[in-house]
Structures are given as structure tokens and as C-alpha cells.
Length: 396
Image (cartoon, rainbow, N blue to C red; front, side, top):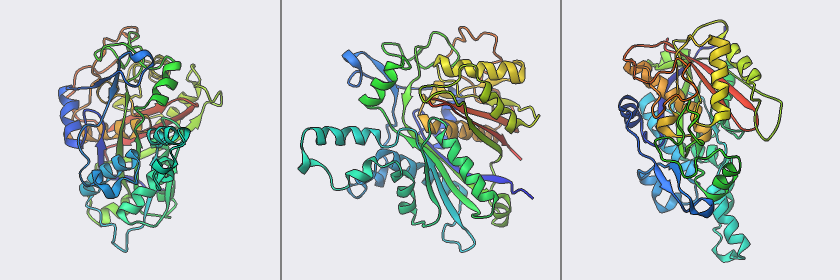
């Protein structure tokens, strides 16, 4: 019989949610604060970005300078998740794998290393430079920090990488290779190369006020809010979780991914393949609501509109947390899952903030927090390069 996959812990560090308690408070209140930067943009125009502001404690100390920022963010969130789960990693009955996702990797550190190398500053190049820019430093750092030597993988696709890391973990859990998994995603790309690249695509809201920038489901938004962060989950087979009497916060009931098969430079605007992956996880079921990836960038938001229309006939309520946290690339999917898990625990459905629904007035969009329980949620994610991902999350 197929093993059910339980979530026994989670942690987060994103703009306006630098731990689970803060994210919960701001999901309920709608309070937010973003940063305006002019040092990253062409001609010094303003750009609203989302930054993690709080110190990282021990991880800010000298001995961890060898780690890229994404690894520090990830370790911080996974520490929170492990504390919540009360999982004993040294228990001989526990076999653990590490599965992490990232979209951009250590791009910020790579930009710094390129400056040094292009300036022939060999002496200034740190000995540990390769580890700062290597994508697998993400999962490797987690393994080293928690002193684990089992399966350790870093998934690097696109904005779906966090959910795809979860998918990999689920496969290993269900085939019995492991009984617990440390899973997550991290990205931190508030740098010039990222801003210039997505700026060329007209995907970033240059010279737009924070109130309208990155507003989900609004055709007035000029693009998404580039943000950083990390999110982590502790997954276990239901058998293992119940044997140790762990609190179960929800289940990864179904998960699926695919690719549009169109182009490295975008995605299918018709959303046909995205609808297929949604259909696979739903298997004919109807969720209480769906937590969409809508981020204030027209190509993505229009696909979510198509899913709502063609799969649910605009009859299932939907929401987006991107108005609160911005778009932290691979972290988006896991953060959406965590927002819904908090909703399970505290009996509310998170709303979409900072939107006027211009052009999307027909959607059954949740714009006021619903203080009611939910038990079944659809999570969607898709992005540049054509990968699509979907999760059916259940309370019991």
C-alpha cells in the first residue's frame, strides 16, 4: 500500500514572514513592508524588492562565511522546522534524506566572484569561492550543518524547484529508502545580473510604487516583486510519524510535475500542460480553495486564470500570498504550502492583499481573511523554462 506522507514540521524566512509566527501574523493582518532599491537597476530607477532583514544569529559569524546566503537562509528555516517536529536525527530508527531546491543558486556570490576575476584580483578571491557559487552547496551545507550523511540532493529547475524537491523526497519516502526527509528551497538574487535579466523581459516593476508593484491578479502591476528567502518542511511516512507520536500538520496527498515542452525562454501561454498536472493531483476532487502562484506578472497570472476557468469554472475560491512575500523563486511553492498549513492549524484561509483585481474581476478571489477551517488545498507553481508543479495538500 502506498505510504501517506505527513508534514510534521515547517519553517520559513521570507519578506514579512521571517519565521512562522511572523508569517502567521501578517497573513492575518495584511501588514507588509518592502524595500526600494536604486543601486541594482539600469539608470538608477527605483525597484521594489523583498528582503530578509533580521540577523541569522550564529550563521552570521565568521566560521560560516564559507556558505552562500541561500544556505544560511535554508539552515535557519530548517532549524525552525526541526524544532517544531521534535525529530531526533540521531535516532537509529530514523533514516533521513535531504532534498533542496533553488532557481538561481549562489548568483549574488557569483556576481562578486566575477568582479574579482575580471579585475585580475586573484589574491582577493577567497579560497572557498567555489563553494559560494556551486548550486549543490545548498543541500551540502544542510547535510554538514546537521551532520547527516544520507541521500543529499539539490534540484535546480526554475520557480518550481522547491516543489520538485518535495516530489523527489516523496518518491524516496514512498519506496521505503528513507522514512524522514528534510526538504526545502532557498533563493537570494537581489543582484544586478538578475535584475537586468528579468528587466529585459519586462517582468520587474521599475518605477512603480509598492502598492501596485507585484500585485497579484491586477493588470496594473508592471511585474513581480523580486524577493529572497527560504522555506523548509519535515516530511515523514505516516507510519514513522505516528510511531513516534509526532504532531501531523497535514499531508502531501498528491504531487506532480511536468514541462510545457515549448521553449527555454518562457512557458506555454495557453496553460494546457499546466492544467494536465493540476488534473493529475486533483483526480476528480474539489479543493476548499486553491493557493495560486499569481505574482503580478501577466504571463503567470493569466495561466492561473485559465486554470480557474477551465478546471473549476471559476467556482472554487483562490488566493495568492505573493502580495505579502513577493516572489522568492523556488521558495514560492513551499511558502504557499506553509501558508496553507498555518491555515489548517489556525483555522483560516489566507487572503490576497494589494490587489484591485483590475482585469480579473471575474475571479472568485479571496480578498478578506476567511476565519473558517479548510481541509483540502490545491497548490500551483510554474515558470520560466516551462516546468509546472502542483500539490494536493490535505489536513487529514
